[in-house]
Amino acid sequence: MKEIHDFTIIDRQQLGERYFSLTLQHGGTMQPIAPGQFVEVRVEGEPGVMLRRPISIHDVDETRGTLTLLIQIVGNGTRRLAHLTIGEHLNLVYPLGHGFTTQMPTGSRVLMVGGGAGIAPLLHLAKVLKTKAVNSTVLLGGRTADLIPVREAFQPYAKVGIATDDGSLGYKGLVVDHPDFVGTYDIIYTCGPTPMMKAVARSAAARGIRCEVSLENMMACGVGACLCCVTDTDEGHRCVCKEGPVFDISTMKKWYQQ
Amino acid sequence: MLAVKIHNLELKNPVLTASGTFGYGEEFADFVNLNRLGGFIVKGTTGTHREGNAYPRMAETPSGMLNAVGLQNGGVDKFCSEVYHRIKHLDTNIIVNVSGSSIEEYCEVAGKIDALEHIPAIELNISCPNVKKGGMGFGTDPQMAAQVVAAVRKVYHKTLIVKLTPNVTSVVDIAKAVEAAGADSVSLINTMLGMAVDVERQRPYLSTITGGLSGPAVKPVAVRMVWQVAHAVTIPVIGLGGIASAADALEFLMVGARAVQVGTANFIDPAVTMKIIDGLDDYCKRHGIKDINEIIGII
Image (cartoon, rainbow over all chains, first blue to last red; front, side, top):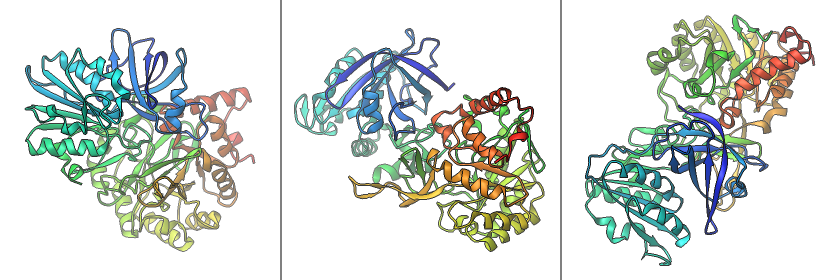
């Protein structure tokens, strides 16, 4: 069930200049959250910012009743959120959207490909997949090594590969050119910049590998009411907020071939 | 204390939700008790399935937003055979927003909705700014507006609300024309035609270049237009445009709206309608008002 709730910020980490994470405590019983679902954050105290901001859920601790958001500073809304400090409240509408498929047979070989802020939902996914006894690899790409602290969080759950545009860490180049990208997999999950996800989807389709992409369109309502955030699919316009953000590429040919 | 009447419609309170901002009600069922609403107005429904406009369809602007959804919906037959059966049991007024590109299409949709027992009213959308042959052409000319309303009046026998556009020189002329043609009520304002430019990319934010502005930014214009129309027609007026609080709703009621619609505010606080109803209740208690009708049109 979705709810509107005031969370309390219990931790804040700055990750390079452009990213930060906020860990939020529910204080009561938090709703169950599936990997790939997102929250709509109310931004207060910033004139000109009216709409909530959709943010991926990076990590979930059901026992403690906490969730972590990994946020990239892109505009007035996220810049305001970057100024929040421990102890302040943040109003969320959550959990929203349709997440990743996590019902995979034991021993499945899975690949997660994240780029920039798109790395965010993959940590929760990797943790949940770990409980399914699958064999996980994660490839993290970024312009620079800003998101390196996040890499360590993945290490207990997956084999981790890194690609940076500037070669400041790991493979120098695109994540889709990383040597581990071309391995044999049963499913590939991806979230990140659109050109990266389309390249991943095209490669997966060509290799006959099942693939799920997590899109990030501009949104207003977050619940499938306003129809502002639609993406092209082979079945017509679909709401990223409700029918997505995760889509199986079997219905997305029109999108990834563009 | 909060009950009001729009023609034959009995509303528990004057709070409705605006078409296109509340889906089919179901999307908000986790956040609000739908049965507490005076009613809700479902998404614009056309004769056939429509895909709507290309993405991007939305841009945030100061205290408002532009949209260019373009009437994406599954068509009237899908509404009647699927959606209707999921929501018809609700104990509130479910009103269907009827849209189209021709008089024939408006009549076809209205006729099919007329047959649905649990839909007591339609809102005729002659004011959508986001489709090429859509609606707004009818809503900007008094004779055209009267023509479509008269045609729908012949096939629709329950409460007929006509939604007006602010994108005209005289909204009063349009309101009088649709009243004379048989409308039971008018609702206003639909979105104001607007535009915003992304200067970094050097192009408009919306795929359609222009779109409809909604949110608190339009409220003073809406209050003014509702006040003008309420003084010019005898049928009940429903006010909307930027309502986000009980105080906003009260402004519209005081200038003559018999009911209000909450739109864009649902995106910011999905439970805002409940707070507005509670706020109206509280206001009446604080001011010793026994019947909300006492303050309707006092200005």
